Length: 443
Image 1 (cartoon, rainbow, N blue to C red):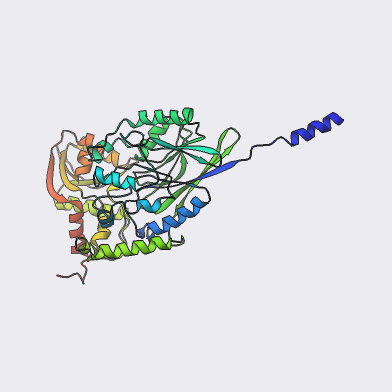
Image 2: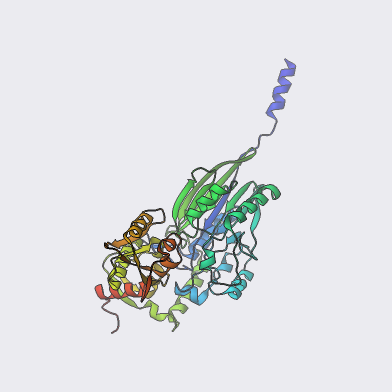
């Protein structure tokens, strides 16, 4: 009996490893949206001052914070062209690492190097020549390996000759191997920067990635396990409308549970007052700048709000009408924002259509039209207006979709493409101004 009692007492004193939870926060595709904006039918969403306060509070509690890239955007909004990467250093001491996005060198390689030199956190990209491939962070006794990838479309999108890109899958496979085998990472995290479809394909091709934070596609998606893998995916939409929060729980020998949500950055979230004052001063300076002030003059008054989808259909119909084509098509990703009801100025239009796409007309046989419709129903999606019949169908589309976008570019290969000299944003502005003129707009 004495032996049994002693043995029981010994077993009760053996330490059992408690569960450890590490919180990760991630935002992406900020695109210089420093001020709060209208989104998803709600005013006062996002804003860098709100995000700084929110991220800093979690950072002080031990969270790891990551940016998914595309922090700037040449041409839209005007803030980006005037201030470029001014906000990047505001995140020193908050962000632990940033992925290189395809827009982050929009102002040239020299400017990118100047921006990077002002940071206390690394810019990662495992398949971009000259950039750090990964970083490892210690949190609550766990080693979190973090890396980034440049998508396959960077070769076309990044017009900076000094930047060269390698194969994404090969780079990811080698990086995950190093993080697991050499760095002894307890978890491996991808923070950007490629579209969601490529992220899913990568998870299936490269085992050992625990979390992929979605970027580039501007997709809003809660935490989801990628089918056929052990990899989780979450994507925070765009412009700091949401921040992804993921809790990694470790127990025993490894990662035991993954939980996550999208935190909306709305008026219920406090703002960092010092950052808010700085943003206010800079915005007032921007509005007074002769180079940009015309952007803030209203040109139309919409009677009701238009969601990004509604605006997209309105714009695609405008493309068809302006060219006289049988049908018109554009990817949904060309339309990045909604328009509120009321006065519309150039800056609001830039935010909704940030890319200055030219309208082209492609003549294709009916079989190609059927394939276009199939693509329009795919996960990436597209907006199609009109119809056509006969040996050739004229299709109004964007120069990006006809010449750059995967699948669409291949579908149009060999077909005659006619440049119209028209631009989507300009034609849309004409239609808005004609249909709903702003009465106070100067003649």
